[in-house]
Length: 390
Image (cartoon, rainbow, N blue to C red):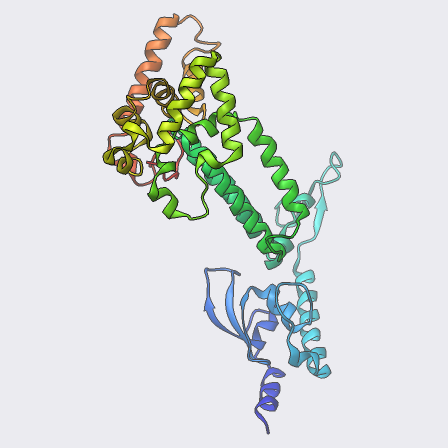
C-alpha cells in the first residue's frame, strides 16, 4: 500500500477523544498552540501534509472545501468523494449537537422585541450575538488591516499631543504618515505604486481636508527654519529628501508667512536676504561649527547660538520653534480650572482659582523628575501615555 493510501486510511478512522463540537481536529496534527482557549494554532493536515496556522474555523474551511476563507482547500479531499462525504457527515453531526445543546429562550414581558432570557438566566440579546464574528479568522484579518493603516495616524497624533516644542517636526511626520498609510492600503489591495486605489483616494481626501484646517503654513515655515533640514546628516538619512527651499509647497507657504509677518516690503526683502544666507551657509553661517551643529543641536538652541547675524529671522525662528504642536497643554489647563471652579464652587475668587491651578501644574511638573515618570505604568501619565517622545 502506498503512503498516500495509508494516510487516507488513518484519516478515515479518527479517534473519538477530541472535542465533540470540533471533530475535524482529528484530521490535523497540532504543532504549536498560541494562547489558550480557541486561539490560533499552527497545524498540519494529515491528508495533504501541508502546514497552516489558524483556528478551527480554518480547519473546517480547508477540509470541507470552503473557499475564500483565508486558507487553501485540501487538494486530496477534493478528489476523494467518499472521504469528503465522511468529513461532511461528522461536521453535520457536530453542528446538530451544538444546536441541541443551546438553551431555549423564554421571552420576558413584551416591552421590547429584542429582550429575552435563556434558561440559565443569562441575557441573550440579538444585537450582541457575535460568536461567528469573533471566531472568524477572516474577520480578524480585516481588523488587522484596519489597524495597519490607522496606526500611523494614531502614532502621529500621540506624538504631537504634548506640550513640548515639536512644531518643526509636524510637516515631515505628516509626509511619512501619508506614505505609511498608502503602503498599508496598496499592500492589502495588491496594487503597484503607479496604480489607482479608490479606497486610498477617499482616505487621502479626508486627511488632506484635516491638514488644511491645522495651519499648514506655520508647519511649513517651522520646517523651513529647522537647521537640521539643511544639514548633510539629514540628507544622508534619506537620499530622496528634498531641502525645504527646493520644495514648492513649503516655499509658497514660507512666502505667505513672510508677507503676513513683514508687510513692509523693505523689511520683507531684508528677512528674505537673511534666509538666503541661512540656507546657503553664507557669511557667518558658513562657519564650520555652525554647519556641524545644524545636524546635532536642537533648532532653537542652534538659532540662539549661531543666528545673531540674522536678527529678524532669529527672532521669528525662536518664537516659532518654541511653540507646542497642539493646544492640548492649554486644554489640560482649562480642564484643571473646571475642576476647581464649577457650578457648586462658584464663590472662589479668580485669584484663588489661579493659585490652585498654578499649584496643581507645578506638582505635575515636579512629578516628571521622578523615576516613575519615565518607566512603568505611570510613564508620561499627564501627556500622552505610551508615547515615546523625549
